[in-house]
Amino acid sequence: MAFVDTHQECTKCGSSDAVGLNDDGSRKCFSCGEFMPAKKGESKNGSVNSNSRKLSVAHARIGSTRAVTVDIPADFEPLRDRKITVETCKKFGYKVDSAGNHYAPYYKNGELVGQKKRFPNKDFAAIGKISGSDLFGQKLWGKKGKRLVITEGEIDALSVAQAFNLSWPVVSIQNTGSVESNIRKNYDFIVSYDEVVLMFDNDKSGKEAVTKAANMLPLGLTKVVTYPDDCKDANDVLRKHGSKKVAYCVFDAHEYRPDGIVKGSDLIDSLMKHYDGELFPEGSALTNFPKLNTITRGTRKGELWTFLAGTGCGKSTLVHDIGFDLWHTHKKKIAIIALEERVEFAALRYVSRLAHKRLNLDPKQLSKKKYEKFVREVLDNDRIWLYNHGGIMSPEVIMERINYFARALGVDYVLYDHISMTIAATRGGDERRMIDNVVTDLRSIVDATGVGVHLISHVRKASQGTRSAEEGGRMRLSDIRGSGVIAQESDFVIGIERDTQDDNSTEATIRVMKNRYTGETCEADSYEYDRDTGLLNICAKSSKKDEDETKGLF
Image: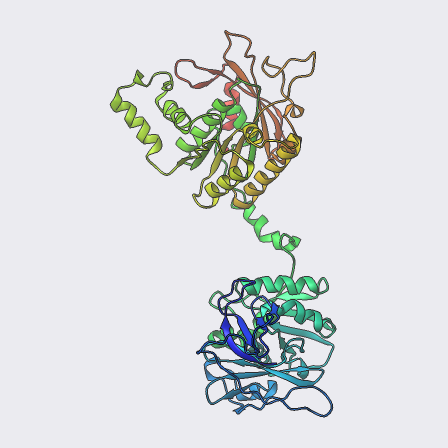
C-alpha cells in the first residue's frame, strides 16, 4: 500500500492538508493519526484530482519476510539550509533525490518497511508501510542507556544527534498525531533508558504531544526541553545558535510535571519577591471605613469578598460605596453586574455619589449643565463597565461575562449584585448544589484572572426565638443562605447588621466574619446613611484611634 495523493482535508480533525490517499482508497491523517478505510464502491485510487502526485514504488521481497524495500534514485547529501552534514545523513540513512525530495527510512524489527517522503513544500507521503514501525533512528541504538532524546521530526533528530557527535541515542516519532501509538508500540525500548528527554516543537500540537507522551511514561522518567525565545524546534536551535546550544537545551531540560504541580524550590524566587513587596497585589485602602481597612489591610485584586445582610439592610449601598472609592480614589477599572436594577440606575449610583446628591429621586437638584458634567465625569471613560442582562441571568452567562470583563477588558474589580438572582433564574434543581457550582466557578475565575470580585448574598431565615438580620441580629457565617461553599471559597465575608424595623434609625454596623488575609474577625465600623446626600458617614463610636491605625498601611 502506498500514497497516491497528499495534501487532502481531514474530516475528523479539520486539518486542511494533512491527509494522504492510499492506492487502495483508504486515507491516513498525519495530524490526528486517524485511519479512514476506503468507502464502499470507491475506486482503488480514490478520487484523485489532476494535481495529485503519483508515486512510483517498487516492492520486492527480502528473503521470506514481507518487508518492503523501496527503489528510489536518491543519495546522501548534506542539508546545507538545515546545517546538517552528510555524515549525519549517512548515519541515519537519510537521502535526497535530484528533485529535492527527502527520504527517511523506517524499520521494524531491524528490517526496512518503508520510507517517509518529504516534498520541498513540506508535504509528505509514505512509501511502503511505516505505520506500526520502530521510531525513526531506533535501529541505530540498543536498549538501555543513560539518556534518550525523542524529537517530533526526522530533521530535528538529525540536528540533536549531530550536536552530540552522532554518539548519543536520538529518535523521532512519525508525527504528533501518532505520538501515543508510537510510544505504546516502542514502550519497552523507551523505558529501558534512565532518562527520556522530549524535544517536540514549541507550538500547540507539540505541547499537547508532550503531555500525551509524558503521561504514558513512568513518573520521574521524562524531561522536557525549553527552547530559546526565537526557536520552535531543535533544528531552529542548530541553525540559529549552533550545536552547543542544542546540547545545552538537552542538558537543561526540566522534569515533566502535570499542570499545577509545583516543586517547593521553584518558589524561592517568588518568596524573595515578597520581601521586596512584589509578590502579592498592592491593597487599595478602604478610605471611607477606617476600622474595616485596619482589619482587612484594604482590598486586593485576586480576592473574593462576600457581603451578607438581610433584605433592605443596605448591602448594595455599601458595596457600591466601596466600588466608588476604588474607581474614584484609586482609579481602578470596575464592572457592575446589578441583577436587581437597570444599568441606568446602577450608573446613577456613581453619579449621585460624586455629586453628593440623591439624584435618583430628583435630578433637578442640579442644573442640567452641572448634572451633565457629573454624568460625563463618571461615564465618559473606560473605567466603568456594566452588564445589561435583559433578563438573561443564568450562571453560565454570568461567569462568561465576568471572565470577559477580566480578560478582555482588564477590569480590576467586579461588583456582583447578587448571587441569589442568578440561582433564581435557573429553574428547577437543588438550590444548594447550584450555589456550590456558581461559587466554585467564580473562585476559579478569580484565581485564573486575578480579578477581584465583591459578591452580595442573602441570608437564611432566622431560627425561631432569635433576632433576624432585619432586626439587627448579630451576623454569623451560618446565616449565609443556601450553602457553606460561599464561606469556604471567600477570602472575606462581611456582614451588615441593621435594625430595619426602627424607623428612626439609619445606623448599621459592619462585622468581619471571615478574614483569610490577617485572620482577624470582629466588629468593624458603624455608619449612618445620610438621607439627604446618600452618603455613608462613620459614626462617632468608630474612634479616632481606628483612623490612626490606618495611616502608614498604604
